Length: 225
Image 1: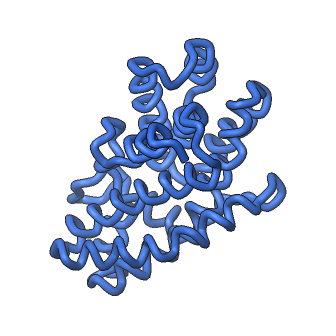
Image 2: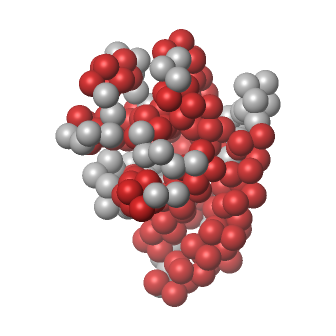
């Protein structure tokens, strides 16, 4: 991979990217409130399972198809994938998260030269979701598809590790051990995502959906989901 491609992926994966990823726990906060996650070990196991059963089978699989669709200017395919993301969010706050991060990343792209104006306009007209916006940004880096998914996964892992530190709460050393466990599992999750076709891609995580619905009315919370 060229230096510029690698740095672009690092930029997209950074928690400092101003798209709001740090403000979401993706139901982890609700799991803590329900007593399901109370320790470093439980937080690590929870997030590793979420990586494999939720992220890999849904959003990563979408990104794996969306990046080549952007590169091939397949507007019909892009619209289909974006609609799938919108239709498969299992709670209103999970859908709101995907929409908010998608809009924010699209605004970020407007100020950079990594996407064409017509591509940005196309996505803006589709009620943009985060997986499709990330795929658009990644498609212009020239990086291999697998590396794009690895970067996205690691960015998710960093945000979720920080959520665990704040919600459980945990110390920084615990957070780094959680991140290490997630990093060790990311390659397998990415390989699964790359192998999934439209018939096998799925967004079905009942426990996350229940917790997300409960989180919407949770009395005290620090995260938006």
